[in-house]
Amino acid sequence: MRATAFVLLLALTFATMFNIECAIQKKQVDCSHYEKLPPGEKRFCHDAYEPICGSDGKTYSNDCFFCSEVQETDGKLKFVHFGKC
Image: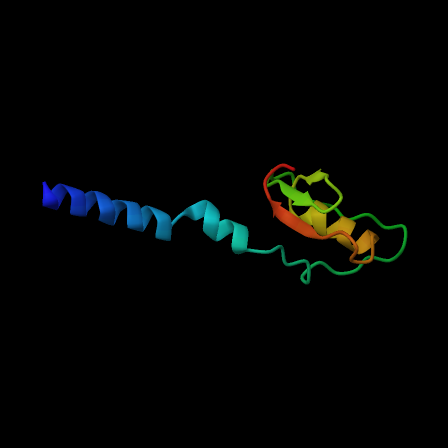
């Protein structure tokens, strides 16, 4: 009985320590590798769907679309979390 309780407690501890969603939430979007485009030019972004929620309440399809909007708003748009808003 004690061994079973110990194993369950250990499993719960590891599940809490290595919670993937928790680790992802600490990560931020790095827009520094997207060059600032000249006025009027639009960025060509890939179609991969990796949603990002911005501080404007909109869900962006991926980091490319998000970072493009960050540049268009002169950095006023901020990262909130990964996933839909």
